[in-house]
Length: 138
Image (cartoon, rainbow, N blue to C red):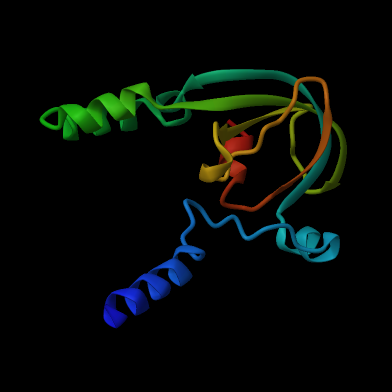
């Protein structure tokens, strides 16, 4: 009985450390600015739910579908996964060059997947790392 009670306490203690995603949380403005490759402010022009496959090169989509052809469940999950496509009109560039007047940002639907709920018409400051820049410039 003591063993079970102790095990339950340990498991409950560890449960507080389980995350669906670990986004790192907000840093200071200075540290976030220094760590980012691009920093812009802009206004959301459009917000659209699109298939995840639209964020991948078409030849890669074909290759993924070919690899999953015998795994119906994962193939269906791949084909039915959706993500938000956000078009952001750049108002001001604080860091970074060669940006278009409008950039596209893809973000998961849920915050548990580190998605962000942009709202149509609102303005945001966006910090982008070099790894995420490919999404912005598509």
